[in-house]
Each structure stands twice: as structure tokens, then as C-alpha cells.
Image (cartoon, rainbow, N blue to C red; front, side, top):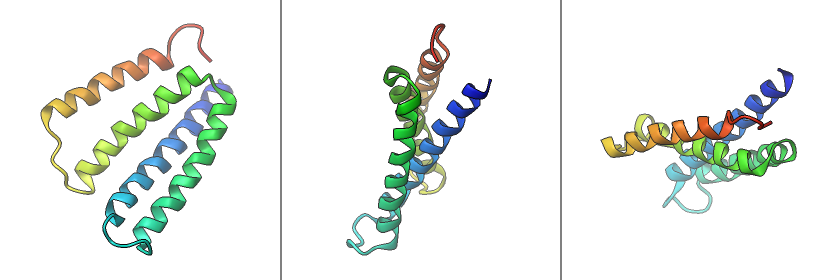
Length: 113
């Protein structure tokens, strides 16, 4: 049980930090190298990389990578839609749903962890 909580906490921290970083980088794009958004995005992305390295040290790459990247894509899609007011097409939401099902299949497969 403790292993599963550690898995969830490390994965969620990595995904959250990566999503914040991507959002900040988008906000800072085109504003010059000294943009606070851009610098904040780079710093947050660096911190997310540290957490991802911790994830890789504890879990199989074949599970960690698709779960982290898939959840980051999903969270970033929501961030773009909600925070940046980007239009997300219905087909993209279908893709998000398919990604969620794929992540469940990978993360909860028998014999993993």
C-alpha cells in the first residue's frame, strides 16, 4: 500500500510540475528570454525533471514513461482549455478519453509494480 501511495505521489508531483511548466512556457513564449513566465517555466520544468528521475529510480520505464507522459498530455490539455482559453475540439477530448483508458491499462496491468 505504501509503495502505491509513493507511486501516486511521485507521478502526480511530476505531472503537476510539468503541466505548470508547459503552461508558463506557453505564457512566456514570444516575450523575450527574461520573461518571468519563461524563467518560471524553465525552473518548474527542471524541478519536474528531478521528480521524474525519482520516478524512474523506483518504477519500470515501460510503466513510468507512458503514465507520466500520458497524464501530462491530459493535464496540459485541461490547462490549455481552462487557463489559456484554448479551443479543444471534440476529437481531442475523445483522444483524452482514449489516453485515460490506455494509462489505466498500463498502470494497473497484472504483475506491474
